[in-house]
Image (spheres, one colour):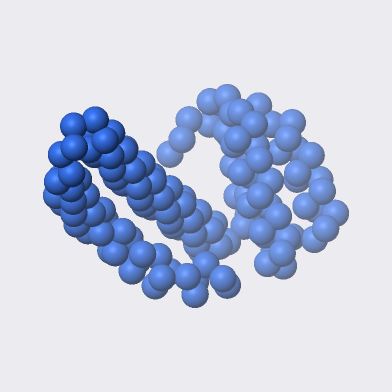
Length: 145
């Protein structure tokens, strides 16, 4: 259990207000009650004050929302990692082709050596991208709900 007297910051306050907003949308709170609790959440200084605001909400609702937030963070992280990997692959490949062209123009040696590192790195990149895309495509229907 978290320390009840631990001070909280803006992120924790906004997370609590987002949970209250979901509770309002789910029918667990009335609009005026949401407004009151949101004002208290933005004025809260300790973790105990924030936890008291959501203590009467069904625990299954709170756990489901927390699980969904973790899944969304993991999905976002996987997408960012995959894009970074693809971007570094493309940039590295273009750099190697540029070096090959410069050497070819300078010396007349036109053996296309970048094919080997590009293929090897490409296989590694595909080994990352294919599984991540497969998992993300299975999660897509849930994310649209």
